[in-house]
Length: 325
Image 1 (tube, rainbow, N blue to C red):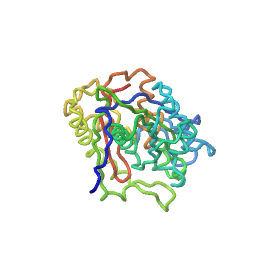
Image 2: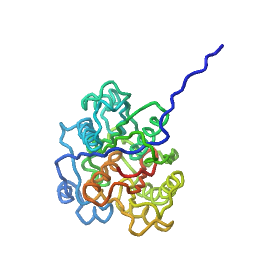
Image 3: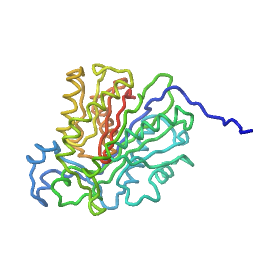
Image 4: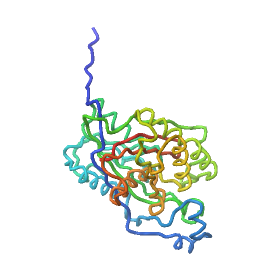
């Protein structure tokens, strides 16, 4: 007789317990870039909205930044590393796939013997990782999960490529996820458009390349419906949203998504993340980093309804509603 397998059952709901981030110290302005390529401050601001970004030094690794962001998020949550049993590191710029970043990061933070894995959905990676973390806890497979989006994009960007070198930057952002009596993380709305895989890829397996106009058209037309789907899944109306944090890919894309949501009922006073101005595009790190910066600036507060949506290579996309810790 085949035995009946036992299944775990976790809590009905989860929430974000804490947020943290880190960036390299080195600030690179548009004027700095104009010294090595044919560009200028106005051209960059007009096209992508970036004023400055942060570049890591050669000896500052993706894992180093992930450790700092994860440590900061645990401190913000008031959670000891011993309480965490799972670590997820969304990223797409680790120099080699083996060993993964998550196990290294966990050990350096002091999280012993956790489930640890990396996740690659490029710029949608953090929202993917947060969705997985929430579901792991609700299924009983995890107790508390540390999700860290970390990228060192300067390792994979041609420094003389005007179209891409002006956009990408380095950094890490993290959230601690745990059980909750009341829902603090909504269901993930995710998907992919594999037929558009050639719009963003690694050229010569070395440098990131994107077909800028194609990606722009896709993001400005297809991502707002994903955000609206995330609201629908969470049972939230556009007018309930206090804060919108799209992936910080391009300020014009961010503004286009905000306009489409306001046309569907989002409030005029909805706060919209514009962290790209001073951080650049940090792929899977951009959403948690933006939230951390906004909390510190006082533009986002505990209890705010936050709508997050990521999108990027794959093409992959994902979004969810959270309650700000």
